[in-house]
Structure formats: C-alpha cells, structure tokens
Amino acid sequence: MEKKIILKDTAGLHAALASKVVQTASKYNVDVRLEYKDKVVDAKSILGLISLAIPSGKNITIIADGDQAEKAITDIEKLIG
Image 1 (cartoon, helix red, strand yellow):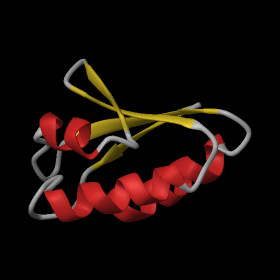
Image 2: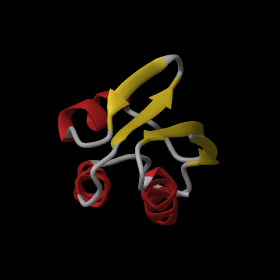
Image 3: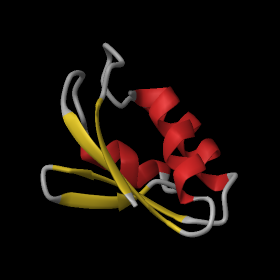
C-alpha cells in the first residue's frame, strides 16, 4: 500500500520530525518506507529519513506492507502531511 502526500512542515523533514516518524512507524509490525526523488529509505531509520533532506512543500510517498499498513500510513501522514 502506498500514499503520496506533501510535506507540510515549514522546516522540512528535520531531526525532531524524523524522530517522531521513526517512533510512529516503530509502533507497527509493518515494513514502512518513505520515497523522495527516487530514493527509498526505511521509515524506522532516523539517519535514513534525515538523509532524504526533504524540504517543505515537496511530494513524498509513504509505502507500507503488512497487516497494519493502512494505520501506519495514516498516522505518519498526520505527522508530516
């Protein structure tokens, strides 16, 4: 399952926000990834998320596989979308 969203945080995907994404993604027993500019990283990896260097207003894709994929995507979208 995947969903395209726009990163709305005015500071982009900064360390504090990346930490919240990792905490949220880690609550679920699913494989969660974020894709930006053809680069895909594990949403449970703070270094991976920060390496994307996503500025505010850019399109990203949340990809999740597993029983709770929809819930994980919804919760991550609430944080960054």
